Length: 179
Ligand SMILES: [Zn+2]
Image 1 (cartoon, rainbow, N blue to C red):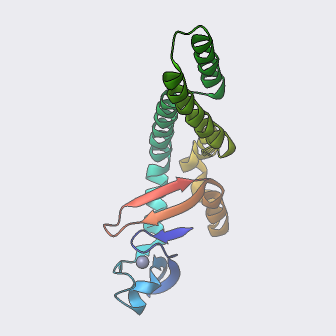
Image 2: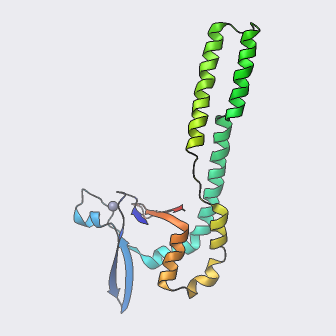
Image 3: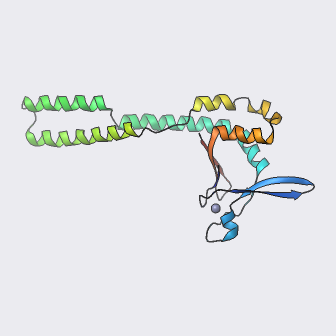
């Protein structure tokens, strides 16, 4: 689930020993293979990543929740729903029947509403799937109290349960994509 933000490839895990301690780290193998494949040669130590996740997951979750709520609201304002469009179409028909708009105007407006209807139907067929922010928040809350007691495998599966993808950019900034 760790992705190089520079080339989009998966980061590979490796180990190195220093000062009698064994460290696990991740790097983009493509960058070590050929410089024109990728230029992100930094290694990311697993314990550095874990510290970052522990310190930032909750705030990251909250800011993404707010952002996606704002986006959904803007989307709703921009794209009227099916019932609203159909109401407008019926009103347009009445106006035309009562000779309050001419045929040219009727056709132009009808085309516009029809396009909106198609867009609304397409959006309904492909709803934007958002992470279940509330469920993730419940899992993450109080993490610092139990995290130290988890085994390496339990820690991995804990993060995997919450996060779909982690991207590490050229400038070492980390971006979480929740499940
Ligand atoms: Zn890369």
